[in-house]
Image (cartoon, rainbow, N blue to C red):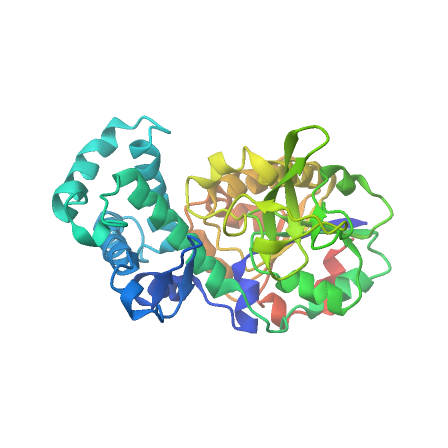
Length: 393
């Protein structure tokens, strides 16, 4: 048999990775500073002279205001306050509008309001090298700042805790293939698989120096039992540019970093490669994710995942908060298009998901009655193979 193991951010909490609220608090009120490499790093700038020109505190003030604005709007729509994903979605819309990447007349009043409140043009705190920045540049920096905070908060050397069920499923003799699908950017699942000496296909070649090259055709392999699909990107994914002197041309390639220094990565011949983005490739935000699924490396991974989705009748799920409209659409269509499909949900309080706005959970009672939704009132970290083996037929 073949199955899909679908993981969300909740499976990383047992290891000690931060939740959404913690990342949001650090983004808005933590100590961060902007380096000359354009990235933001945790802590305070040790150079007191440069620290006085750091734009980071002003960006935090701007993001705090956007959160307040968003909270007021959302107070009648949901219980929780805005988080960094909501803030990013607003920031991205403003940046796209200001840079003419999109046309959204409804945003104009809000942008004019922000200009009036923060006086971007004449406010010295928003200037860079004594020059005023456009609103497009300011919100571009906000995007980078949010992503750098996520990158910094989710990077860890900790050993993954609570993944034993993954190993049990892989070791199961009656399971021919397991497709691990994760929305997490962190590297915990890779660390766990490496620790149990499990070979897996993730769309990348064997290392060539400091990098592995992305080749979606590798997912076609039938000899490997485990396949890994990271639908929201990863902390070790980068786009690099290689200059071919003999052809006087360049190639842009998606890669996975093997070494620790993305600024100075080399291929197997010792040739230095140019990193095109200063931080890893992963997707942030709420409703913007659906459009982000349509391009780049993420598009290829989604296409390969979708192929597997149609071939599998069992999904074991844990840690997913049902906040991704695009993913929800995939899953709802999947479970309704065949009476043989089953979603085994590992969740301490599965009934709470009935409050979700996802169409899946509007049919919660029907899906249970039909035997297509099987809730097990445990998190993955507390579940063993005996809890689910009877459903794997």
